[in-house]
Length: 245
Image (cartoon, rainbow, N blue to C red):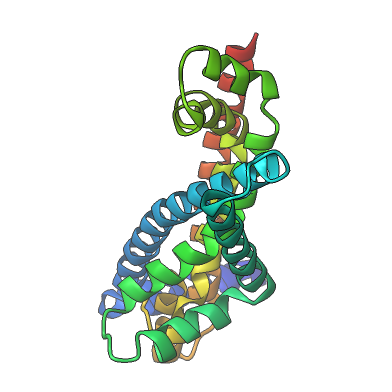
């Protein structure tokens, strides 16, 4: 046999050993489902937190100098300070450290690792979503606020019915990219013993003592998912550009 044929035969045996024997492919399949579950719910939490923080911060930036002194202005300033502290801490510390603090310190008595991972990644994502949404809100012309007031809306109604829908349209591609980034960040879930996709590949490696095939398999799965979601983001951006014409 030629060297090339021997190499293909070796790869075939390696593939069977790592994925077919003892149905080891199931580690990747179960891990993939957990990865997608954590990513999906973390995105929802991140968007919810991000929108609230973005509205508070943008409202403070736009009304701090003109608002009358009183309890409302003091409360808004306090909330803005809390939001800035949240953004500083979350964006200034590694996500894997936040994950471990959430599991080993805050929820030390909990055995639900999926829930802990969802909360940790959701809170982390919220900080980045907040700045994305805030930039979208600040990009809306001030005349839109005046138009809302002329229609009889108060500030909250104007923000909810006029400003936020336009801001979301502007930042939707950036939010979609944040989803892709979050998908890859969940690969550190194994630090709390959660059997996600990366951990599934590592389990196969520990059973077969073969690192190449399972880790390359995990990398290919992540690459395919990222390419697919990037393709969807590209289509979304093109649709938005067409809609703006």
